[in-house]
Length: 98
Image 1 (cartoon, helix red, strand yellow):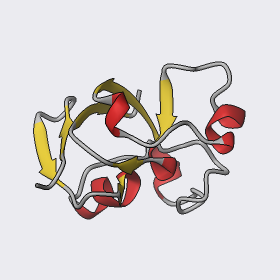
Image 2 (cartoon, rainbow, N blue to C red):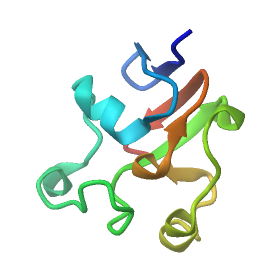
Image 3 (cartoon, rainbow, N blue to C red):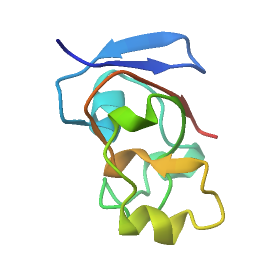
């Protein structure tokens, strides 16, 4: 069964393949992930820029663990994750553009 990702701030639930990259799944579904100019100037999912931040509100245990890139970019915000570094293994809920 395909995991469900609920994007709380827009009230939308997406079905994604198991192991899908969260950033790619959100962008493929037309979800706005990047604020302002970051939509054009981002690292394209390599974890360098930190602009694809999301707040996981439920189902954190259904996502892959925090990476070194996340620890480095988000050290002052442990409540956030980088969507580009997350593989979805089960149902979860997120907020974009926190």
